[in-house]
Image (cartoon, one colour):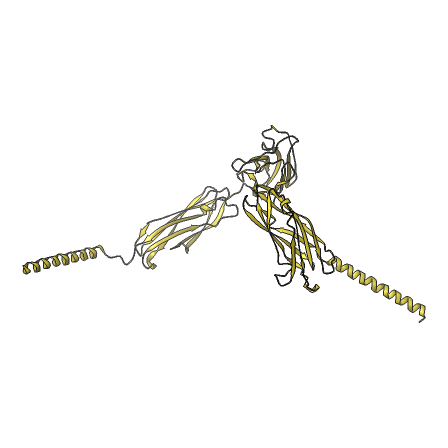
Length: 463
């Protein structure tokens, strides 16, 4: 082989090896995990004057040697009163670390804190999930504020910055709510008939809102939506109201136009944001569910959101069930060996035919199965069942319970009336006959009188 060819082949091999090495390194870089920094719990509710604690956590972290976090919040709502190192970097205090934080900016609603391994080798770098720090706040007044990540720095042993994502936390008091009113619509409505529900809310200083609501389009579908009187203060304020109806959902929004003042409601007097008209499409049940909602004040701050409030979904059903049971017993007090007659009245107070099992239990706690019957009842029908319980196997007396149960169906509207109780007692088998008691009293009386007579006789002899 000529020297030129040898040099050419050698250079080619070196180039290929270099390219392979670069590709391998590139693959390693791309496969490196991206850490996620977040606050837990994500949303906090606490009254003024009380303290609460949140943790700053890391998830899916690559191997790191140090970290630094900048957080900010509204200092008129909450105040930071304590901060402590977590267990991620020190690996539950098995490694030496330096934990630092600023104090001068805390009153302004801003803190920078961080931690680094101290004199530890690169092999000590942790990865994965853990707690970076714990922060304690005190609540100054009602309101809401994000606990916001301004920036985060993650470094490995070589001081190379690592990628990350963040999710802010949020404090809110009081907690606001949004609901469907009435929450349950149980009516025997045929396809083509219509009904209305309203979106109601408890909120303060509301300026604008939007919500997305979904349902089962095979059962119901929204046809029209009307603005409620809450935001426009019974049409005394100018508002912007929009909605768009899709096949199985709707998006609704409302806002007070410039110049109007925010409005507030209470738990006792909910504000009606909108009324939705539904048309029945089929027979069955459909949830009316809030998929998302956001309420803002005049400054654009969030008042109500899925993680910051409570939502009460609604439900429509034109095929609901309601089985009711009642129980009576022949005697409240029985003698040992007597048979107790148990009468059970079963009613179908629902709108559809039902087939179900009625079970009767008897015992000191009403837990021993006496028997069961399967029934099929149409709407409005009822049937009386009779069971007998023989007390001859019971030793002694005591109190006993009768429990009658029908398992609730999926569309049961009143589960409490699926259960009924009755009580009775058994006289003790060791009961003393009245004749024996009278005889004992007579004997005792005779002994007492005889003792008195003898005492008097002895006393006369002495004198």
